[in-house]
Length: 170
Image (tube, rainbow, N blue to C red; front, side, top):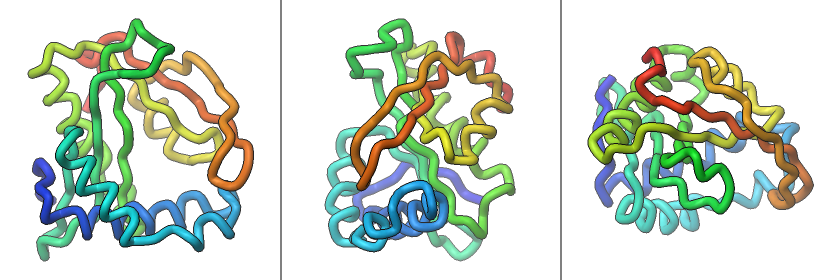
């Protein structure tokens, strides 16, 4: 598995992973009507912008296809100011989950944060998303729970944090 920084030409494949993972992971969590209307084209435009503005990393399989990605940035939220970084996302196609790719994608973001002197970070995860167990297994501490409106309903988002990213065993 090759992990590398994303380039603009990756936007289309990242968009496909993004939509496909949402449709499998959030089925029965987010209303199916919302999931059906997700568009590869709209997500591609989003990822072209994100690649320019964020730290985006991709996981490529042996054929060079992108099967997962991660993003991270400074924590620009008004809350949780004691955390200076935010792991914005880790998405991996269902067929590739459980192979250690998530840890490799997380490591790419953490390494970038270390280079930027970012020493702590948060991640927000929908309460019903099984990925929360991934963060818990890496000793993330639950620091908050917030209600959000969007995605066709009201959902609970859990906020996890690491006060010291050097303590993450990846």
